[in-house]
Image 1 (cartoon, helix red, strand yellow):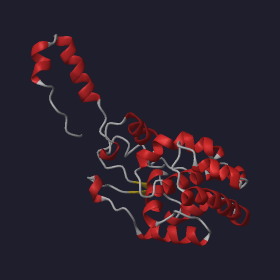
Image 2 (cartoon, helix red, strand yellow):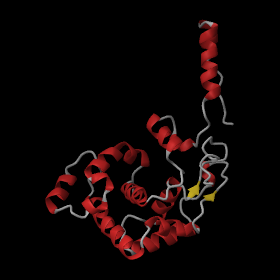
Image 3 (cartoon, helix red, strand yellow):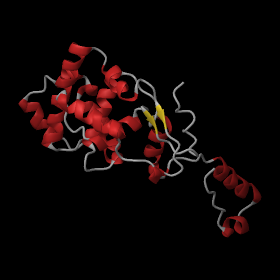
Image 4 (tube, helix red, strand yellow):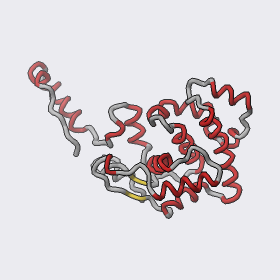
Length: 218
């Protein structure tokens, strides 16, 4: 269990008993989370419902790979706050529609304040869509390919602290190398490791996080 702070003395001295008991109830029932999500409700919800949940859906993997690439040099919360704008701008990450983007629409994207207006990152989504479709046409399941880097089975770590875990591994380096060979962009080793964490190929919830056990794929 994580550390639980006692209420400020003024709460006990200046408020009726039921108010004090309600405060204690809220404190004692607060789940222990990985520290990286802080106290931002959007970030906490992402941590509680998405991060580390094993995903084997081609389209969802494609979307997340691109969003992870968009955060290069930024923070994930920045992209998370813009995620719905990205989905709208890139047709819910439908690769068939993305590859139809022309020069005029590309310029509109560069003026879209709802996404990161970086030409290289915008162009990467378009080229990644083509690489994704080419892979599916030649090899079939993109999910099977991604999960092959962990031999098809989720890796479960048991970190005591967030700082115990790495930001890149030999596996993420290999994934990065192979994705680049296929034509994907903004898929460096650190981005690939973050992608693997978020999509549940790796369970990196710290051991006392209330999501560690539920996110272990059965």
